[in-house]
Length: 276
Image (cartoon, rainbow, N blue to C red; front, side):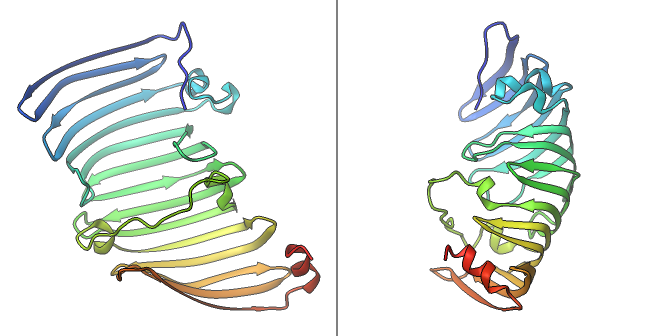
């Protein structure tokens, strides 16, 4: 996911002290081409407290280092973040203050077939709350127009999200022939069981293989270890479809309940999608 060519300037400096299993980082400085990272903090056996600042004013100069074409981006990234009581294993969202600004940026995530491109993001962290505003993002052929996410109460997180997409294709986010998705083990004292929230999702196009649904809207609720989807509507095969679903994760084995109805579908389009 990264290739450093000869002649690319880089440097690193760290000053730290250790006492038993506790490490104190007094100063950390790292530079790669025009990316500057600075930090300091403490690391104990189970917790991290740290402050980090990062600046990348011209991403076009380093795009090739991440195996991306230089014409992919000409944006910038600025980060100023303090993290308190980050636990391992993670049992709650850490206390964070600061902000992140991404202008026409990119993110390459290991395991995903496509990088996130054209990322325009503003995130503000206020300790017990956080707000993320996305004003554009592309992954493969999927394209997000706008998205917002707010978080309140770290002990019992309350999440609200709204995503408006021009096009969404799940295949853009999963490698072909990759491992099958498996739900992780969810512990009763974990973040998921203590969280609640509501998500609204819209997409002009929702593509699954050779089937394209249009004007998709879904409402998702999270509460008490259950994911409820009381509303899903879409245009499908020149007709209409509506459904609802619930995923119960409170038991030993997940339970999925699904019901719906379709009307005025064009049979020739259905048969064509089925390969008949």
